[in-house]
Length: 106
Length: 395
Image (cartoon, rainbow over the protein chains, first blue to last red):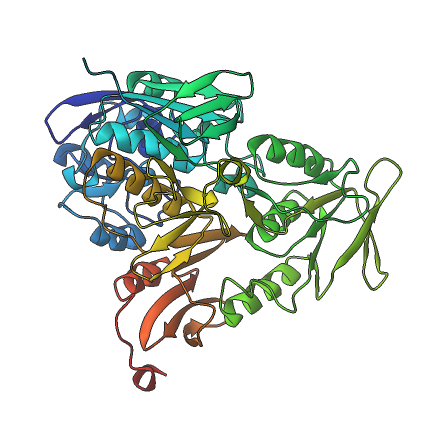
C-alpha cells in the first residue's frame, strides 16, 4: 500500500498508508490528519482539503485542472504547488509523496 | 485538586464527530465522550443516495475517521447507545442501558429523522426511508433486483435516489405534491431543468400528486394517489423531508422551535448545553434570523462554534452555506441562502437546458448562486455573494 507523508505546520511529519485507488484526502481523513476536513466529501466543491505538494512530487502529480485551480483561489496560503488532496488518487507511483498542511486550515 | 472536565457529545453524525476534533484541535485536555445511536463509526451521509446507493463507494470509504483516530485523540466512543434522559440542572445524561454520565458541557447533535407520512400501508415491507447506511444497504438490495421503484417526494433525496434507481435499471416513478420540483430550495429555472432531465432519463414524474395509500399483501405492491391513480410498485421510497430530533431536548426543558433554539455560539437556553447540525435552529448573526439547515458544511461550522465557546476561544468567522446534488452525472451547486419571505430576482447566465448559473438577488445584493454543470462559475460567483448587484446593468 503506498504511503504519503503529511508535514504539519509545526514541522512534525505523519505517514499515512493510503489504499490504492483512494484519494490522498481519504487516507488523511481516515487517520485523522488535522486540517484535512473535506466538507464536500471529495467532490471538488469546497477547498477544505488543500495541501501544498513537495515541488519534486508536484512534477509527478501535475498542475490542477481549471475547476480545482479556481477553488484553490478560495483557499488561504495558496502556493505554487497547491492541490486539493481529494483530487490526487494514490497509486504505487506516488508512494512516498510528501505534502504540507497549511496552518490556516487547522 | 482539579478534576478533568468532560464534554458529552450526543449524536455521532458529521456535526457530533466534528465537535470532537474541534475540541481537541483547540486544545481541550479533558474527556470527550461521543454517544451515537448507530453501531457504525461516524460516516458521511451525502453519498447514501448517490455513490453508496449505486454500489460504487464501499462502506469503508464513508467513514469520517478510522477507529485508530478516535483512540489517538482520546475520544471515548459509545456507539449503538442512546441518551434517553438529560438533567440540565445536575449535568447528568442517562443512557438506554441505565448508565449515568456526568458532564461539564453537552453538545447535542442528534440530527434529523425522516418525516413520517401518515397514510395506510406505510408499514408494509418494501417501504423504505433513506437516512442511514443500513437504510441505503436495504434499498440497494431492492434496487439490484430491478423492478419498479416509486419515490414519494421530489426533493433532493428523492430525486437522487430516483436517478440511482434508473442507473441500476429500475422503472422509476416520482410523486411530488407541489406543481414543480425543488420549489422551496431552488430557482424556478433549476427546478424546471431537473424536471426535464428526469423525464428525459425515463422517470415517470408526476407533479401535483399526493399519495392516499400504499397497498399490498404484506408487501408494498402499489401506490394509490389521491386522484385514484394506481401505480404498481416493488419498492417504495418515502422521502418527504427531515424533522429535527428534539425529543430529548424538549423533555429536558430546552427551548425548541423548528429544532433546538441556539444563539450565535450554538448555545441552547441552558448555559452548558449546545446544539449543532440538523437538530439546531441557529441564530445566524449575518442574516439576523434563526435558520435550520440540513447540510454538511453547516454541521461542521456549527460544531466549531460550539467547541470555540466551550474553549473560550473567539467564534470562528461565519462561512456561506453551500449545498450540492448529483443526478445522472449532472452537478448542481448552490451557495448562499434566500429569505423565502422576501421577493427574489433571478438572473440566468449560460444555456438554460444545458449548463447555466442563476444569480439570485434579494435587497439589491447577490444572496445566492446556483450552477448546473458550471463548477468554475460556482467558485467565481461565491466571491460575489453578499455584494451589491445592479440588476438593470446585467439583465
